[in-house]
Amino acid sequence: DSGVTQTPKHLITATGQRVTLRCSPRSGDLSVYWYQQSLDQGLQFLIQYYNGEERAKGNILERFSAQQFPDLHSELNLSSLELGDSALYFCASRRDNSPLHFGNGTRLTVT
Amino acid sequence: AQSVTQPDIHITVSEGASLELRCNYSYGATPYLFWYVQSPGQGLQLLLKYFSGDTLVQGIKGFEAEFKRSQSSFNLRKPSVHWSDAAEYFCAVGEPGTASKLTFGTGTRLQVTL
Image (tube, rainbow over all chains, first blue to last red):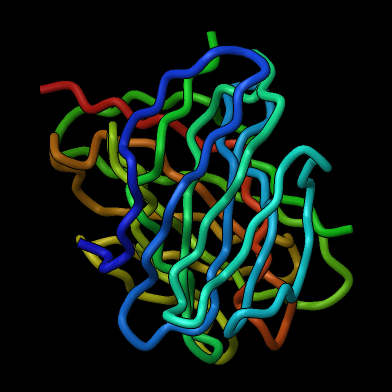
């Protein structure tokens, strides 16, 4: 158990809809990262937050957004969903310069 | 831009045999290097990491990896594979001085035959 909790585990929704994925980092970790894992793109870094502030952006679409709250949990919001957004979405957390610790992911299926 | 290549998409080994998974990276300096393992339905678990110093690093579950600067490689090895090692293995690089914003390889799926 990595200590990173992601909910829900599975999500099935229709095209055009909006969903929110939630992540609780390990206790004491200030940094939260979001990754997308798809068959065609592999593991892609989306965005990073540190103590509530956005720190880095990767290949994140404009339809996607994220935030980190004062209690350090984070949410990834995906809107106007398309079939191609179907993927595993991972959250990871870390403190200082330690390696990333990943959650078990949320599997999103867009129908 | 940094990149990671895992040339083997799928590898099959017999239980008890030795294993080597290849990883090559492209980066201007020596990056931070990682190997992660992903079992079905699970997240990524860190096996080992290289930041600096001894080029042979030991990880969990009996894995080790060797950093070879001249070959820009960071291959993962295990002397004797167990059936429970069947999973997908990812090599990743991070910018020196940070372990964040990792760039992952495409992964190698390991199958273990009994």
